[in-house]
Length: 293
Image (cartoon, rainbow, N blue to C red):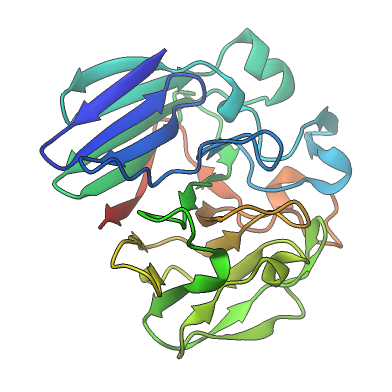
């Protein structure tokens, strides 16, 4: 099932499976979201929960118990329920259950809010800890894929730049794929636009250590004036990714409240870099916005 939001400028579609944004289409027919070609990358914009990235040996430990877990968690493959909806807003909900508790020993309520305002779509994460005593440990993040050949199928990735504001030098966390190496950061110069190429992603994602600063990334091409402006505040990390060596003309801009395990991680969830600890009966709220032009 698919939920549709619509205004005078955009039509948005969100799949109930995974609460995954699957289409943002302008009235002139331009599709801004990657259409999930399985030969390259068979997703559109998955929600990453309760983990972001890979876990060491694909597992984690809680109270001396080991739990297997695949990359990016399980929410992206589960059915959400639309619990509130009008033409320009929907809330989609996933609750912990017997199945999730067997592989992730925490109660949770995950509510995805999508709000359409003119040319902008806001994606909001609400995580509730319904437990009366126990803290909820989790990560969460977005993985939206954006088409680059907007309005002209001849536009290539190499025709596209990403402008980043504020213009400054950020710390980039290296990947020793599939794990992170935050003890040896490298410099990422965003004082000039980032020229996109497929080879830029030969070592996997570019991960910026934002330290919670607000950041805006804007795609521009040399052919027309179409693009995406992506803004997030309070996210500790941001990933920029496109597949390699299988390639296509899209890029993912990924706000993360959490990160893949470090190369030296001991496996204990309570010690995981970037993990969020939510007290009993408390609520976590974060969001990012996407403007389409």
